[in-house]
Length: 126
Image (cartoon, rainbow, N blue to C red; front, side, top):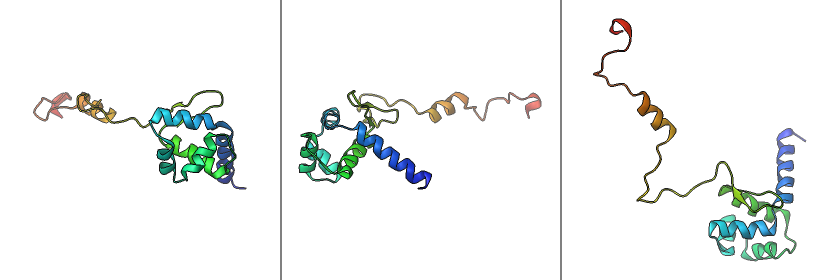
């Protein structure tokens, strides 16, 4: 088995053991999603979400699909803990009354900008 296939297999096994029915319900609450919303976003039947969250048996691919869809929203799952926001969590855009924080590139550009008309800081005007 190639290392890529092995890492994918290992990742799937980790997700299957870490992502629980309780996580699904808690994640939906964090996102403000109904079961129908999660089903639509994940491309699965609403009944599959209901079965999973009712602790009934569902296929591993359904469980993985739900976990990966919720992770795509920036949530992370660990056994024994409520879902939380990961490092790369998508956040909603700022409200119109809240100014957006300038990005790192904008901040760097504004701090090092030199006017064309300003005298050269190099000797001999070079």
